[in-house]
Image (cartoon, rainbow, N blue to C red; front, side, top):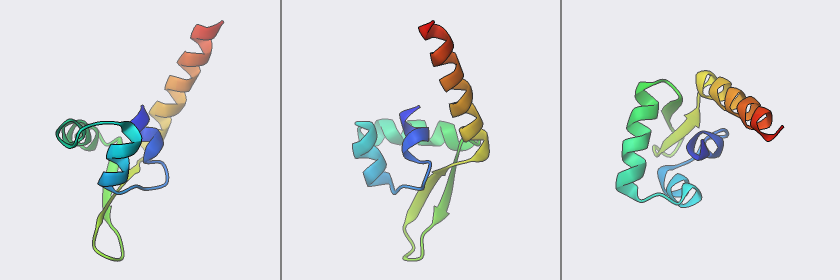
Amino acid sequence: MDILNTSLNGVKVTRLMYKTNLSYSTLRKYLSATLKQGLIGRVHDSDGSVVYHTTEKGQLLLNKLEEVKLALRV
């Protein structure tokens, strides 16, 4: 969930690593899985660096997870 939230507006891998408090190797595993599932997208910035962003499918998942969190609080 942290990866999807952090990537909403686009983020480079180093910033994503620090914001999610994950090691590089662990983050790579999660990025690979979320990319395969279509939850995260990868694009190249104007300077050529890779930027990850949450896809529409990822945003839908985030919304559903928020609904579940709210339901569990009751």
